[in-house]
Length: 55
Image (tube, rainbow, N blue to C red; front, side, top):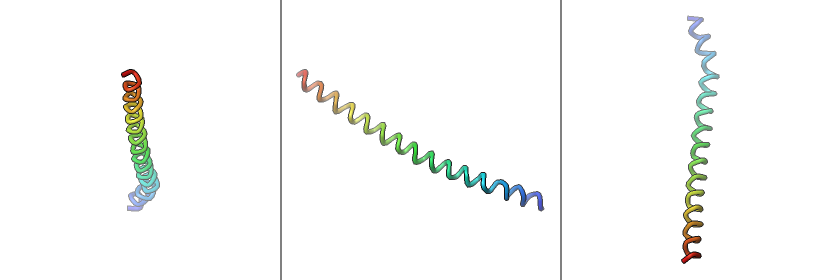
């Protein structure tokens, strides 16, 4: 029983670290998606502007 509690005690910080890592990863992927969307919109806008200039 003591061995089991030691394993649980050791795993707790690891589990916390994994959870915080997961949260950070979610925030990061959300930011990346936002940036990609912004870049896509900017690219489309620039392309349309270029077409208008040529026309």
